Image (cartoon, rainbow, N blue to C red; front, side):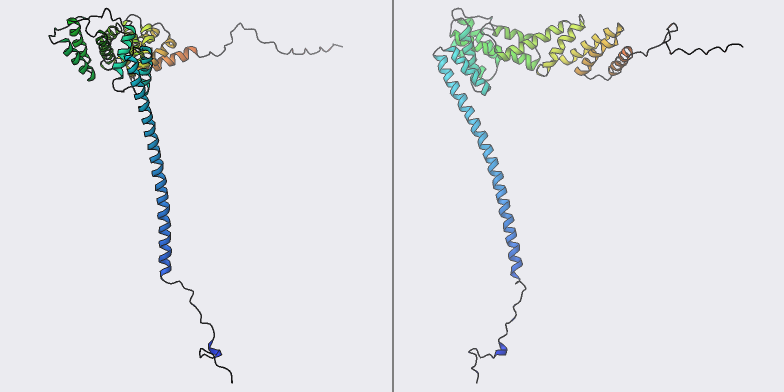
Length: 344
């Protein structure tokens, strides 16, 4: 008798039960969730990298700006100390360095003016200017008003107030008064030339400022441009060639010079070109016509400039060679003479 199976199944009942190969319904949802999770992780990494780069760039810019500000403050403070200790040349170098880093640094113009005056202006005989209107306020009050006006950029008030102060007491804080006058006259002169187009008035202010101390490079440039413009303007109607030459130089800096330089350059060059056309020289008129149209577009002048260019092209075009009637023909190969047949 065969022993029985402990499970109570016969040998015919021990075949393996086939298992299903289909995934459970939860498997697709799990895969989709994993894909979304991976995508979110990638996006988070990209966003983190971008924000980190931007934050790093901002931090570098802020650090650089902070370093510049700290350097400017350090040199400014040292310059003030040098000025007080009468080390004027060293103070000037420090203030110039601050202007290169930050031209709008608070108080730098006033300190530079004080240094320039101390370096070049005599203190024993202070410069006096005629007072436009009398002011009966005490000199200390006038000086306080001038300081406040300088801080607010009211150059005319500074000048008038200090002229009144100097009329009362020419020796009262002469060095400081000279420095304030220099700064106000210098700034008003540059403003009149660069923004108001009042070139003669601006030149006058700069010449008055130069009585206290030499002009800085920026103010000297404005003065040179204004003088160049006035020189070119003096040739208008008298010498168109010279007016064109000088206004061409003014035109190179005219974006920084608010006046009618464009118009006068165009008129001078056009008039100069018309002189060439009247003399029968269209080639000489081409360049002035081009200068005039460059300075100021002019639809009426364009056909004339085109005509001058065409006339110049025709006048300078090479002519085809022509054979004259007396020209000797070129030698050709000799034709052989036939031998005469003898008569019998």
